[in-house]
Length: 208
Image (tube, rainbow, N blue to C red):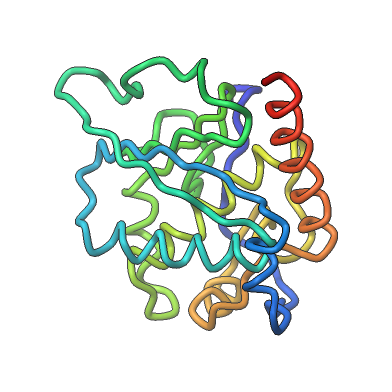
């Protein structure tokens, strides 16, 4: 596996995490915002993408973040590479690529990977494989996979956790918690994520 990538697999146990009451307002109060640039190479339906955004937004909101989405057109023959330069984007911008098939060499149950240059890949064939568990929709699984991979970019290397959404192997129990909406970042991860976004945003402001 590429050393620059971190994969999301499926298989361990979880303690349920609940978004604290009033947490939804934290992102507005603190002003933590991330921007996700979406390249839908897999032609995922608008309905599923909309549901995925809702799920990811809720998970990020519980971590005190506001997620902004920018849809980018894709062209035939570009082989899954995002169009346009990413250099002008600051460290709070991320590229999300929805791809039809997982690449060769990844773990059997890997739904996605976090690559260098703030790129997150999600493999829709792997998402589909997990819809049999817990009566989940494609949008639900996709939204959680997005939050997981963006989480890797904000938490850094070796950021799989022992519980919550950053667990490296999701079991049937994790997927059941996902269906209930309580598969989230841990409090420790939330603290680190907010500190990282604050650092990236303040660095850009100082540079300006």
